[in-house]
Image 1 (tube, one colour):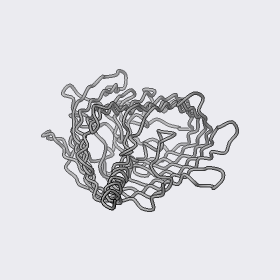
Image 2: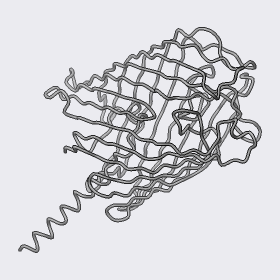
Image 3: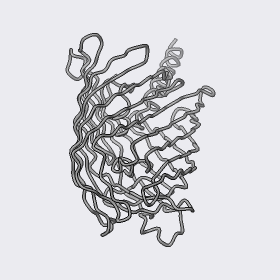
Image 4: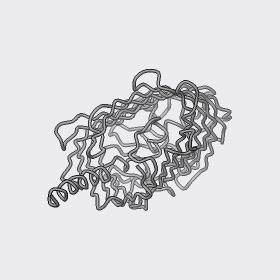
Length: 397
């Protein structure tokens, strides 16, 4: 009888171990919080700390690689994320707070609104963004025509509800402050935009059919697609840009963004994953389209096809192939140029205990204009890699 009890207890502990170790917490980023409206969380309350090293390798032998910001660099990288699904007590609120190199976020969702609707207040800040304006030449080399630094701060208020099964719609208004400055990479012939205020309306349409594995907590099958539409006005004055291409910002712009996560089970321990992000903006919306944390261009798509494999209780591996498409202005700003890029990499997790995990990934794309790895200078490369520790504290189911 005792042996039977030990066997049952061991099996229960294994299931709990798996559910704790493989829960999808490691991917939480500023983009996740500002894109998705209803992310499933494994715990009602927890703190997650991520610390590691992020690096780039130029990957090209061009003589002017350094002038383009391409270089080999390793920097410290990390973030802190706090989630509380019981914030506000009986009002069934939710609090999310995030701070990382990619941005700072604080959001409160109130679930006690009429007819199943929820209200949301968000405060956001991107403190270290870089802007890299340029074009691709005939050899697919990115030629920067203007580089500068900036910051933006936003306040948002919205209301949303589920209008059909698993279909959620949210609408709201926001105010944003943009600030810009020159840095060491800014050319003396480039005029940086003046600071300006922006305000507008934003709509979210999100459908989520994702099903989580009861054993591991990982996404097993289904999809989540989020569509974001903005209508924004600004009080920007004056022209900016290079001597060859000077223009002012349009006073009113529409923007569209979309993100897809799709999970297709292959077997008990293997799952196909499709991750895709895209954007569509005005050709003259030159601040948004040249931010370095995403592809440069007025219309672009960045997609990965991944194959996630679980090895036992504590190791997962996800090799992937990646493709990119962008439509970007040419050097004179009068025409557009379409470019395609390809690459691949691998994402690996090692779970050491119920509190600590190790994450490492490598990514290559034959696109010189990739995200900056440093917060102090715009430096990047065709190769990117990361290795670090993820710790979770105060988890409450």
